[in-house]
Image (cartoon, rainbow, N blue to C red; front, side):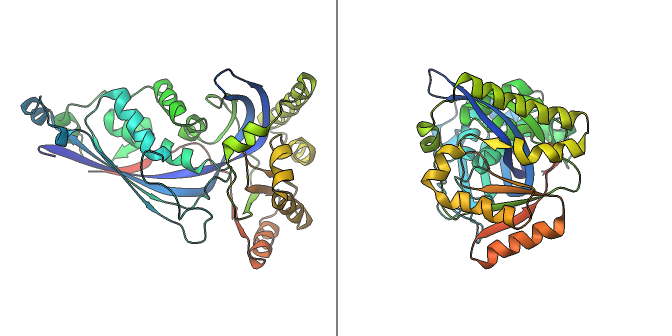
Length: 355
């Protein structure tokens, strides 16, 4: 691209777990209404976004740009060794990261060329929002380049801002609300992944209420049975619970939230044994008994509690002691399973962007 500025953003795209997942209704468009406490964890994909933006002089010279000069999106994926499902990920318009770039360019009208490289670690179709996390990373990168190109949007440039001024794109950043709306068009978990940390998600997942982090020192074991579970398949077979049951589960959710907000750590641990729940287990576990066996195995190895994340098939378990968590993960790996220890992580921080 003639007369252009080039920027590179390197971001971590963190997986998430669902500490609670309540389905509260079904909309006419087919989406389900949810109430879920979500938490980012340290398992992440590495996402590199390279943006080429034409400078203002080039755009004025080429106001009638040819089709060859139109914005282009390229996606490459580096599979993670031993990470379930990462060998078979599409690198085209079926991929959420690709769609995120496309939606952003449509929303802003910016003439960016975008190259995305993803080093995958998060298992695919596993209830961990790996695709949504990648999409959110792409949106954050593009919005950082499009805007003031400083620290305010979670993306920091290492170069001087002269190139930003020459490109004529300063001030083009989307507001947080508009960026979440773009993300929601890509996937229901993308708005959460844009901010990360801990939050209560409602609606289809786009309405977020930030929450305090999980107790310090907590270790999380993620275990996957080695097969994918379709989110659409699980939701399509879920029968909405009676209103009284939905209300009961909602009260359990808010009781746990209150313990976190009031920093009553002992109460949180007491509630975790019986108050963490996922209504989608009622569909997934009968169809895929290995998910239930993973839960039982983790509890037998000292987990305080174990639960399926999202629509499965990954199970997470909370441990008070890191050494017991590590031993549990090793035990599952010795049996040929996929398991690792991770931690809860705070919301999105500052990523490194360079010219």
